[in-house]
Length: 319
Image (tube, rainbow, N blue to C red; front, top):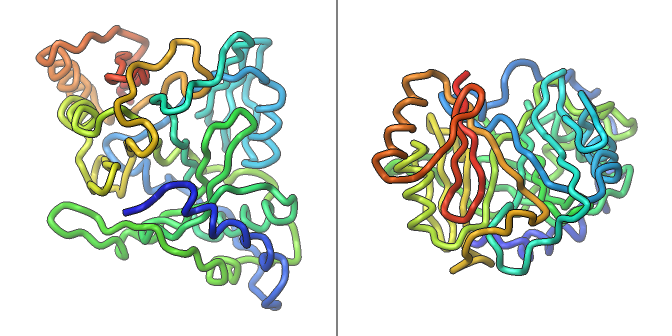
């Protein structure tokens, strides 16, 4: 399965051309989705992430105006952003940090999951109205996705999952791919004549995280054998993993980073991300797996902090 950004960008060049024109008489915008996003209806899920940035003000502005997040707290050195009163994106200001070198391990993209397809449609209309540059869009069969970059070069995905009844599983692997995203069915869910995206839906959260790593086998051992995610799909240069038969909470690829070593401690980009675990015994099980494998970790409030083989920091936290 080819999922390189160059393929997605080819389709993105025409994204906004017809969003604000075309079929009229579409339905009024529907109310934002309630409850938990599909990714968070599992025993493990990604609940927070931290990004190391140089321009704190500019990055806050992007996530407020483009994604629609709200600022929940803020200091000279950072900010906590989120939706519906829940914080899930921490920005950490580091003026001395430097961009990671080409081919380094780290963040490929951070993915925000919309509660419903109408929520995604409203955001697409918002993005078109404000001519927000995008790097790609795709129908992955399990999701409908739009890709873009924040001002510091961090990849972002905004997506909605298709109904779970439509996901096709064979031998424990879910059918995924990269196909043209047909915007018309999405846009028929909302009224394109008005701006109906006042901000991120209250239930929007981080759905998954996609990482660049140096070796797929080593990544699978860490995220599956040690952290307990199940492999849901293997394809050319990429592995997808999840909990509870979600399509993926974590993805790892070597498309641009094969053979990469440990990240620099002051590289811009991903600082850490956290995995929420539904119960304390499951967290204790992960601790035992890590100890048995000789992988060091340290205790933090409510859980542990561990690094994958490339220095990507993962916080495991019981909820």
